[in-house]
Length: 251
Image 1 (cartoon, rainbow, N blue to C red):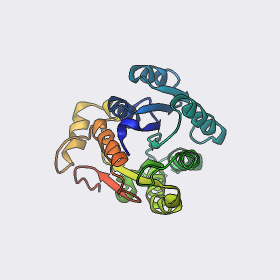
Image 2: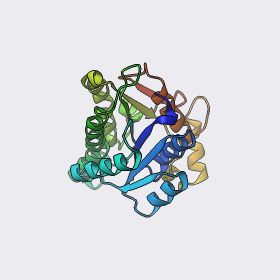
Image 3: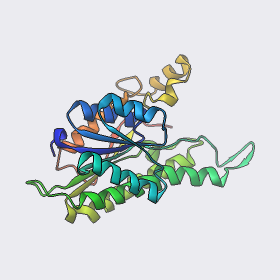
């Protein structure tokens, strides 16, 4: 699938990995619609790249359905969905204040896992209506996992579980959608310089970067974006999770 003819929806597109992906896709000629809850920054990013913004709650079926309708009207069709919306909470299973709050666990699963599936299933239904290309392809879905799915640290029970769910659904979803010509991939980033990490002191950032074998630095969101674009164009990639972590194995 040629990235220049791609019509992409990107969740979490107002910041971090999602914003970097939106900007990169647009720079390559793709049509882009940003889905995000941030109604302040979202329109600004969309205007800067010549895209569209729709305020969206990925956990709400009606909200996502409306966003996909708006995206289809703006771009004519949807051929790519990149799910970057997510949250990360650091809470131990049992800590000084007692057991892990159940609501916090459920919220993490709802946004990171259920939200990704919600967007994926509705986007897939829209993609299935596309005319196939010469390879029979109608679309591609890229979900964001994390190396925490494999190497979860203390305080990451909820986050690791949500990202483990992304990993676990990648292959069966790819198999489900194969007959429709829709590929499903996941990217598992390591430690990236997102807005959350950018707010940490420089010595903390340096400490995190020192754990990465090679290159010994934090990941750049632009690198995630470049990999996502490669996945769009590399039609034989399907049903796989790609770690993007500089060989980092958390402990």
